[in-house]
Amino acid sequence: MDTALSTPNNIQICEVTCDSFRIAWDMTPEDTARATHFFIDLSRKESRDPNRFKHRDVPTKLVAKAVPLPMAVRGHWFLSPRTEYCVAVQTAVRQADGEYLVSDWSQVVEFCTGDYAMDHLKQLLGKAQGSAGRLLRFSVFYRNQHPDYFHYVRTECGGLMRPALKDNSGSHGSPINSKLQGVFLSCNTEFDTGLPPNDSPYGPLRFQIPAGNLLNPNTNLYFADFYCMYTAYHYVVLVLAPSGSEGDNFCRSSLPLLDLTANPFLTYIPPQRQGEDPLFCHASDVILEVLYTEPLYLEQGSVLEISGHHQMSQTTANAKKDPSCKVCNISVGR
Image 1 (cartoon, rainbow, N blue to C red):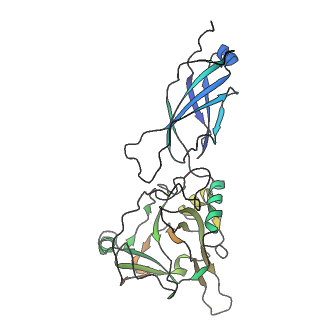
Image 2 (image 1 turned 135 degrees about the vertical axis):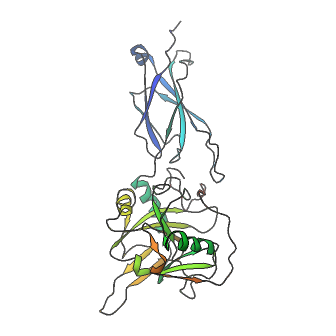
Image 3 (image 1 turned 30 degrees about the vertical axis):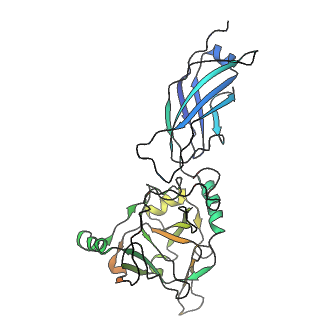
């Protein structure tokens, strides 16, 4: 009768990305020589507050031929970025009759997958470029809010709109989620007027600032996300960061840099002749969410009341993208 296999111990997880990891453990020399297969049990860690926009993973077991450790695990699992998982392992010897002699399961180890790497973001950028549509001119960035927001900014913040931490909405793997601070602005316009829409789901007051104050050769533009939330329209998240700022330094190592004068989303075209003004254009077929990484004083622009219907929408804070959409998903996860 074959001797029982010892229980794997000292489980080690390393080289974790958004969709792969390496795993190793300690075995006796005798088991190392005998083992023909490894069994790996991977499942998502239970969350006390599961996101209703996120599909649950089914706990999965992998049977792999024994290889030198650490062993790479990728592809088989459909791992999601920034997600906590539990993993345990068994070693096994396949016997002459086809049955397996297996060890006991190891202890369960927890780990968290990473953000999208630059290569993944460039895949997402490629998809977003195909949905951007033609460029339309615009002249102001704006932020629509409820009167209570602007009252708070004036009375409690000295008229300063302070950067806030980006929430977890959009692609789960976007590197800016819960890491980068900024002030969200819009720039989309109506086709027929070239002006911002009168309706807003966020409130009847609008802060607006000339586009050239923020979009100019002294700022850098980065692509951060492309997503939808079970709707026909898509969002593109861009980051505007003054060159050399803390936000710029973060983005430079984490996000694809866009050419201000030649990209399909948001452009600055310098004056062609003396006395001319620069031109500013935005993509027509996606909703742009522009995160400006620095504080903004209300006195840098103006606050005005807008006409139209202002029914407050259900919050999208921390809402995840539709994982089944073929337009805005890439193969590495949601």
